[in-house]
Length: 104
Image (tube, rainbow, N blue to C red; front, side):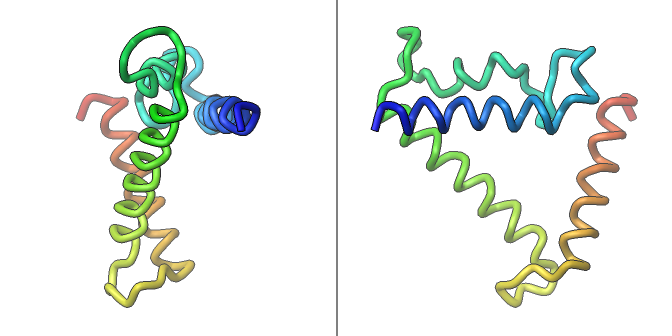
């Protein structure tokens, strides 16, 4: 179980690093958080390690974020995301990200 938790954390960090490689110079991944901040965010009691309970809390938070993103992508509210809805949502996120970076 411990190996699964470590693997999940490393996967999350690696995914964030790869997804945000174009922002490495700024020290941020696509979500705007420092990559090293992912560990600190999950370490709720700030003792330098992530317990199973902290890991589970982080997984719930990630699921909630993904669920909200899915619901936002489902523009027509039919409970499914079409390829077109996904493309539109991605374009909107990209434009928001661009605006945030440029300070608009």
